[in-house]
Image 1 (tube, rainbow, N blue to C red):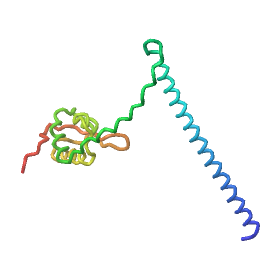
Image 2 (image 1 turned 90 degrees about the vertical axis):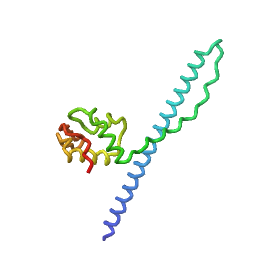
Image 3 (image 1 turned 45 degrees about the horizontal axis):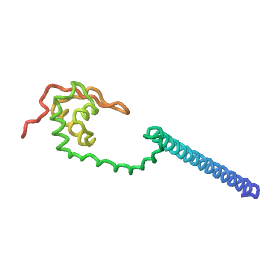
Image 4 (image 1 turned 135 degrees about the vertical axis):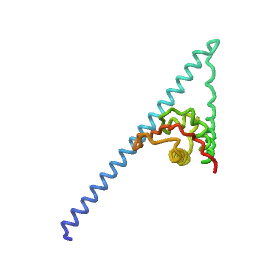
Length: 158
């Protein structure tokens, strides 16, 4: 490596450093603007709430601003159903499904979102036993469509 090459590479590194610092500073400024915006919106909402309280208070005297309520705790996650439960639920809801349906229709009939794997296994089993046939394969954003065949969804016990 010659001295000129060394100096050129060192200059390029310094230039990359400056560009990186500028990018970082630009990101910092964007974050500060976003924080300022949130602050202003929150202050505006609080000011609106205080004005409404003053306008609607009786006797013309300004009512104290309402106390802030603690946020509600998040709801408990729905109970996860095991594969045999999902299978039984799908078979029980089978009559309520349209002749041609997708996974979304099954979820609506069940009134809950089952485990994907458990639902897939149930639909595959219904296809294998002849209660369903695949109308069109899904792919990407398109769901697989199933069609009822008229066969009984409840298998005969062996």
